[in-house]
Length: 267
Image 1: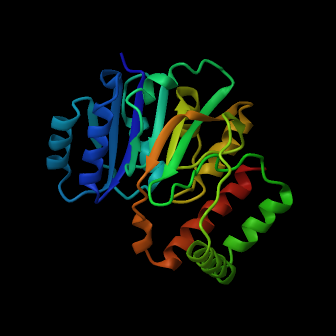
Image 2 (image 1 turned 30 degrees about the horizontal axis):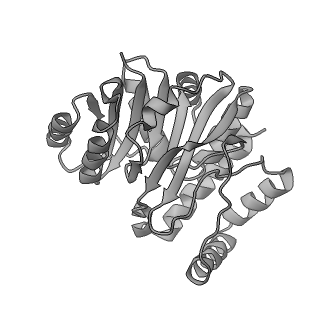
């Protein structure tokens, strides 16, 4: 019986995916957790698939015809795997589950109004808590300001320059909140009920990279459901900054593409 399907995307980080699988193997209910991997880019997919199978038997590797990005890469895994499940997890592979009971504790959640759960994600380098990503739904004014900044390359570049300066000068602060309902949770680890995954698969989204948090938040609201931040579930994020090697204009293009899609989706 499968309780969880964990879907991740691999982009030339096969070693990290293997380490992630080794972490899954430590879970108390590992025999009820299936791992699916979408190889957006792998040097030797067949060899990688065999190696992963040795480390984590309940795993499958899929190879799309093109790089699908993070969210759609993970959704590709869900679309191709055939098992039914209670919860689906879309996750980065640079995270560690702090407890061997992480998945077992998710099964305690019985509120049918909850479609998405965000764990307490702590950045290993700084100790900063990445969740809740956003407590309250942004106002129309905030949405318009966000869209204006990130769809103009000059304002986009200036924003990230200021953000870089802030990180260098000030130690990031975060008020740790108790568990509760929130607008959105951080994209490095989404815990989603099967119905939410199905709703995501039904949308022809145009998100290659960035703003997955907003897309999922708005989809949950559209379906009359809720997102829950659960401080009992703890994850360490060893942020690998893979995108730091990508040209800034390419990242801007991806960000703008996400915003243009979300403008129509939020209406």
